[in-house]
Image (cartoon, rainbow, N blue to C red; front, top):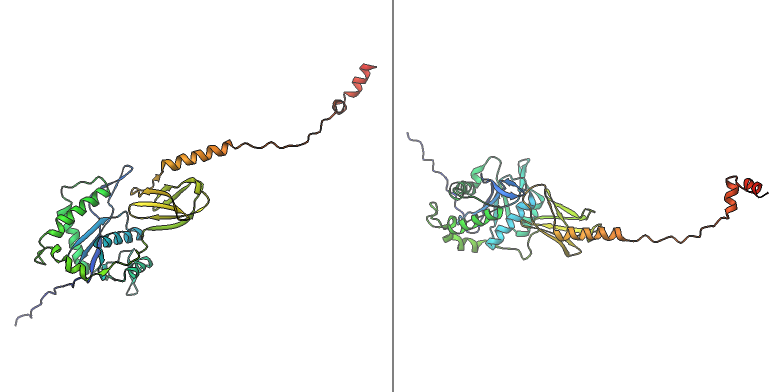
Length: 313
């Protein structure tokens, strides 16, 4: 007797059906500024039907940065797959009580786009094997022989390589290039929403006397004229902006290093001028009537009146 055949399953995807997502941590040090180097995560998205890859390095794996990265990449595609497949990344969601539960921010993001987010079961890497293989492909085909001067440089090199090499190569499984399937894949995806989803870091706070606001682990200066007033903070992957009643009062490049104070020279100069002006404010004299006493009153006070009378006598 022979064992019955045991054919392997073959996963086929329909155009626009889904994309698999993951964070790849490249094993290479990238200069972050202020003498620091690090290995920030790279958000990777692979479309199931065409195998087209898009990816970018983001400042952190925290929810504001992860969702901002999602929107940047999907906006670059100009369309959105009907489902995104994720593992149990903490900023995406977790399995609890045998059920997948999305984070509040990811659920809001999903709702704005009108898509599904599929969470793989724990310890099930095969459910997103496409993107796992792409991560390995990056390490064997993108990284070797490269060096990077900053996260911006990393993303520029990665974008060029994806456009000219990765998405143009002959894909063994497909029998064609990912780019050859892209038009049909993209046409079946959903349109982007008319209003962009709310992503990135957002907060409202009363500006303290030192006129700095914090985003992640870094402090950014704000014009000191707003001290004591409530300001709005909006930070994306590249910039940090502060507004007062809708008017912009600070804008900085996002710092990828940790625990730094970023100061706009104009803000420092304005603070110095305000401190100087405060010191130069004259204190008005108080107009008070002062009683003028007779000198004889002091003679009596110190017992000199009798001596003076004796001398006269």
